[in-house]
Length: 241
Image 1 (cartoon, rainbow, N blue to C red):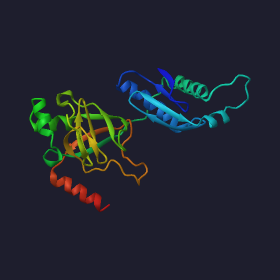
Image 2: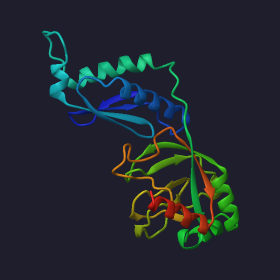
Image 3: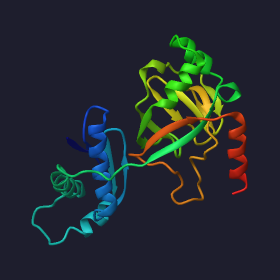
Image 4: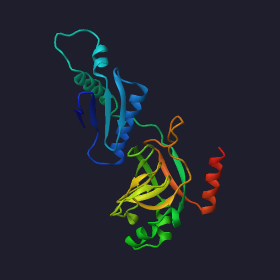
């Protein structure tokens, strides 16, 4: 475990050096604690694969420092001390039970123009890729890159495929892709180089909702293959509210 400054108003808590579920549980435990017990002067925290970055207002940290001392203690030192105390308390803590969320996906065709390449690259049929991709359970490590974009772990290596050599200028909303050993879902239209294998009708970013995304770090995801007709029905129900 390491703690180090990020500029003069943030501190990074590194909870592991390897991306795995053990480190993820530590990230979640600290995140859940900070949600329930915000630190004096804390503005926000951002969980990632192996770290939690805590942003703070230096003036507020000093204002909440309590009794005067003869030796000046910087806002960073105060935040570091508080976080070290919290981390010592959390060593044996367990995290909240995770949710399992099903995401429907219409694979192939115009929604998955790279499905054939993924299959060929791995010596599989397109049906094999769909079966393997939809049979695994994925862990949401964090949300990032684009609003609502889930970074997932747990994709079978049998379908791992390099990114496209030439990224697309715009990926349609809901596109499901593969890049290396990762899979993900594009919640908004954005440039990207992932291999597209399908599309979900389920919205993953709703800026007017609270929260704006149905997913959060720690959730489990399962993809379910649906037909084009089912996809269109999902979209129609969504349009009707």
